[in-house]
Length: 411
Image (cartoon, rainbow, N blue to C red; front, side):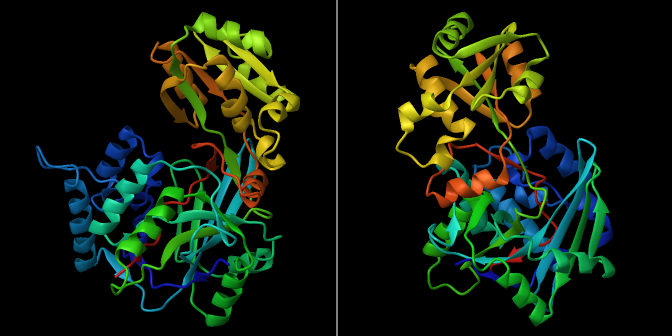
């Protein structure tokens, strides 16, 4: 079962500058973001999370060496200071969505590693490239730079304790460029640590963000078997999805097909209930659809609302668990795409920003794009509990847990 442990964290000495020192997780940092964050501060966490190689003709591994050397320098120079006491870290984000005040509050700790199974569950498939990338970085810089993100169905048991923290000054407090208020409390009293750890012990804990980093941690532990250090855990931000405002946005898709846009549109109309919507009205039509599964296909010059029934999905994958069959992304990959693009797709790309994938279609770089509806955190948990995984890039948890609030050394 999930075991969340206290650890002696490394934190920036200049806590008042955290707004300029933190960054998002590596996998949502765009090339432009990478440049901007590098230029924002010489000690910004992106310089170890996603470093550049500054040597002409350097090998691909050179940037990992840079990250490791830079991190050691920050420790030696006092940029980062290690706590003298083990702690769990309560992390709270306050933000506004569609005019409503929301929050996500949880606990950052060292999550004991175990194979995926009863205690810790994945919810989507992974790709080998990111695991290789993160493993190379971990070898060069043996530290958990950013926390993975895990969710449980905890029934809100920690809410009274979280509310009590309002009377304690946090160790860190700042507002980011998007207007989100971030606060961090270090909790080192043994009784409080036991209470916080116990709140997640029943599990199962579902990996929301960080599948590749969790698999990286397992691989690193295996290859370093017997070496001294703290490689039997990974830093994790644990959140109770029953009580927190966890938003799960979809990853929209864009792609190239051998069939042209006109033929692709004809196939959609022939196979499913399809309605052309006015330019710019697609998002509203998608949100208003009462179909079991609905998608907005973006083709050059037109937007098509495509609706798929439960029977369509059950006819193809009816033996699979219901929680998995009821996902729009499953209907897309298992029913729609095999019928309308049987030749397969090329240059498949993902984005949580529908405008970004629409621009790829308008520019002619992609044949079409698909906008999906958002998920619920409970959907993700129930699919994982059923022993299934979603297709890759099925969910985008927001807001992200920032990188740089606390680091967890492995040596």
